[in-house]
Amino acid sequence: MVSAKRLNRVYMKFFLPILIISTVFSCAHSRAQDISRKKESTHIEELLAAARKYKSRNIDSAQQDIREALLLSQNNNLINLEIQSHGILGIILAETGGKNNFEEAIHHFTENLTLSRQIGDSIASLRFANNMSAVQSQLKNYPEALKHSIKAVELSEKLKEQKEFGLGMAYNNLANVFFDLNLTDSAISNYKKSKLYFKEIQSPNEYYIASTIGELLKENKSYDESYIYLKYAYDGLKDTGDDLIIGRISNFLGNLSLKMDNINKARKYFDEALKIGYEKKFRAVQASSLFGLAKIFYAEKNLDSTDVYINKAIEHINALELIEDKAEVLELKANILESKGKAKEALSYYYRSKNLNDSLAKLKNVPETTNILMQYQNKTNEEKVSTMQVILAKKNNWIIVIVLFLLFLGALSYFFIKKYRSRLNKSDKNKEVLEASLQSEKDNNAYINRKLVAATANLALKTDLLSQIHELLDQIKNQPIQNLTKEISETQTQIKIQKNMDTMWKEFFTHFEEVHPEFLKDLKSRYDITQHDLKICAFLKMNLSNKEICQLMNINPTTVRVNIHRIKKKLKIPKESSVVEFFSVN
Image (tube, rainbow, N blue to C red; front, top):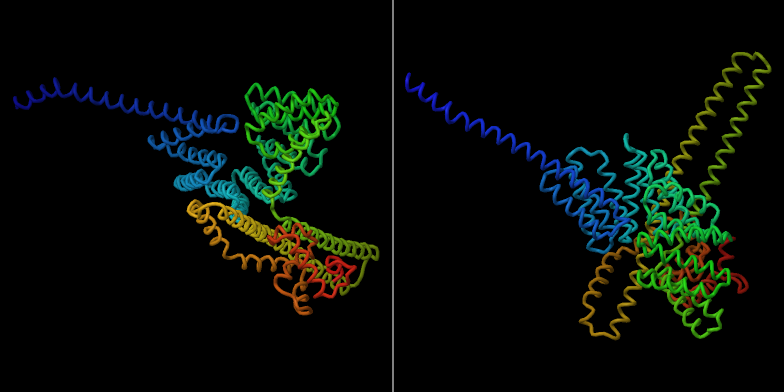
């Protein structure tokens, strides 16, 4: 008993204080860890906020911040912040461009999807579809970009929460694909849908998209409508602090004002853009505003001031390698020199401008076939809808007349009333059938349009491939073959990808026959005509020019003319008539 008491006293004297101290230390350590995690979390959120502003800062610095945020969130097991870090880093890498960056961007988007699904994020798949659409569009893989964009629209429609934001992003990405395919009208239509959804939730994205719509309308020479959208974006973004976008929009408004012969307003916008450019060191904004002011001085016949501003603009454009702007600036420089009587120097600038424009035209060689087919199909759809509406309106009017007639007569026998009701029910059923048929046809037309875009995009890829092979052969003529191993390997890879071109042509003919039924079948049955001739006949039926046919089939203009002459002989078309005229009436 004494021994137990002694042990108890020893425990109370020595071990209990140690236990208390240990417990206090453990609590303090746990508290310190919580404080440390909270500090790390706050620091990561600050890095994420800074990285999100990558468009208005140095993109390399933004990338460094987001990589640090990703590492810290992984080390501290902060899964929500890790998800955000993967998403933002993927977007920044995609914006930076380059094959390696695109591949890494896809990796981060995939990680973002995997982690988001683990925590039950309902919009993870939508976010992934939108991000992949943007990357595939940058890679010029338009069929894949379209697939992801359409998937994003479908996923957004099913959302209960954040539906408007999802649809806004989905239609914005879909518009970007159409824009890259040079389908301007379709791009504008989808940008407008995107803007409306963002407006519903009062998102500032509405103003960014409005500025894009304004830029596209300016390219379409719809100056009044373009000014409305750009001014709307300008007023909406002026207080956001996004100086880069404000400077860019100011330059666009300046150019529009010049187009609309309002020099004073143009000068005001260019001066404001130049001020922002100098204050924030945005060289691209400076270049555009300097060029705009040079155009104003040129319009005022102040050649000396024009020369000063144009030289400054050229300096910035050369440093930034803005090829598209450079062609136009060089042309204005040539005009100034010509006005000063320096014809020889002016000619040199004219040649440089022309060569740049020719190069840009080749780079932008996206076939117009899809645009023509879609416009034709949309026109056909509108005519069908209009016809259906007339039919339904006539039926409704007829029903109203009958009802009024019955009311006017007052009372008829039960037999006639029952018969009338039977006819009325039958009419309503016919109306429902017509409406269901119309909806089905609309859905089918939308599907055909998507297939046409994908098929024509693949034809454009084939043209690019043939151009690459042609360039490679030119290089082989003058260089040792061992120096071209990489280029040959890349070209062989592209050739493997394009093995299914015959299938693409079949797909194209399938969609063509939906628009022009029996046309090709009739030609084959009545005349001795080859498959190659059928392709040219299809393009001529669509009223494409010789130049557009050259681009689509990758043949020279002389070959096109010879083929058309041979086709005229086979079809026995008189010399004084053209093949296009013949097809328009047959």
